[in-house]
Length: 222
Image (cartoon, rainbow, N blue to C red; front, side, top):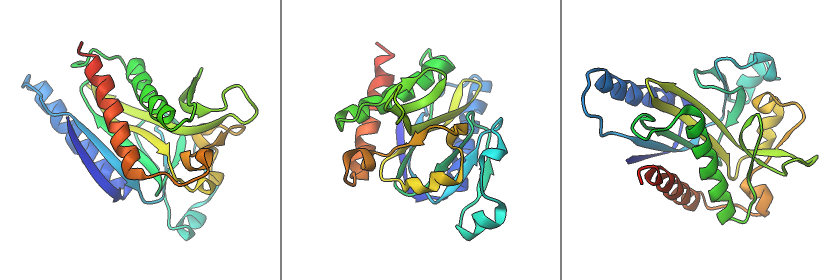
């Protein structure tokens, strides 16, 4: 599996790259060619808000002029889920893999992404959990302080994935005040930095999350 670390890049640039890679793999599958290529794109984005295909635009609380003043934009995309924020300090991971090859269904794949993050957080002493009916990884489950630390949204075509997860590492959480994150009006957001009380080394987080994700994928083949 090839790892592409795109550093910090615009959302639209990496969105285009994902579509090109996914399209190439799908074309090979259609032609019944053997597909060896699988990728994980990882990095950070410049500030942007993204809205899933079936998301509610009213969950964006700023108008276009206000967004422009912040040097930001709202992009409607083809993934599942509602609205979220991406920006510096947030770890983005976009696996582009063939679920058929790994005998994974969509729900199983989302579960694998959640488990990847839960395992990563555990290494840092943070308890991440799932919440029924709310995709992603949460902290403070079933408490008044229930808060989301990782958003997950995917798009799957002919069994090939794109999009993925966004984990708040050293993210400026104030950026989420401009939206109802993931459509929720009564839940907060969290970051590793806020939970630990100190900045977290992004290079180390990247290395650990890739190791965990690849390990989980490889375990499917046993």
